[in-house]
Image (tube, rainbow over all chains, first blue to last red):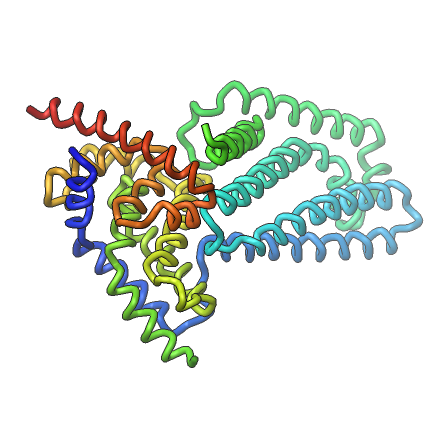
Length: 220
Length: 168
């Protein structure tokens, strides 16, 4: 088939009833409103909510630490959790700024490269959070027992707390090994997402895609 | 311009160029079930960018750029494309049931096998855009565009030949 034939065939492709209905539905819902959200706007909003939520918890932890300044274990536990959340927020703010810079009017290649860079950063952050989350169990336990009116060290003993921290580390390693072994074999969308993220597969895929975009830029 | 005036002009222009949304959705979304979502996403992205639209540029090329960017990112998002719906579509044989001209059906099948950015190059060329316009939309040099288009055309010719022979 020659190029003109292809063009002629292509030109005959007109919107079907389903497309027209979808366009009309979108226009009916959105034509007079500036505040409608694309999926990207939704992602930005979720990231901002996550940042705000983390800051509320950081402030609460700070207040908790100040109230329990006489108990070193409480202060250290709240400090560990607070520092982890602040580090998480620094990474999330970076992502929120990058997401704000996304403009669909940008040419395809640079925009897709920006989106893929954000995806890689998000995948790396998710993998780190999933891997380190079990380590937060022990400090969280100390804070929760204290909030319930008890003293975790006196009540449970330092050995129990240490064993809890070790168990958390064990769970983190086991989860990583399981994610590497079973990723791609699970049907549950959530487990599939978690195993891809934790095993680093999502991050590798984003890097591969970035590399393929870079190859596309080069004249072969 | 007021929101109402903007909205009326946008609605009119979008209806006039709805074929672009249809072509992009057909090329990037194999599942019919997901196409309305993609079309809605493209429409919202277009509407949100419309206040910055420069009338000295053609509406269709501006629209193509945004629609293609949305389509390429839409299905790369984690968990966005549900394999079960794609399988159901395939099983029911409805994936491209809307194509009237058999040449279009074959062309869409071949385009479906291209890389997302190659697809974009081909769609723009099929709709008659110049190499300079295509290069500007995709963000590569005109030389690179010409080289890639020539290769994609050759590849499509082979694929279409194979598919046509296969149906005889």
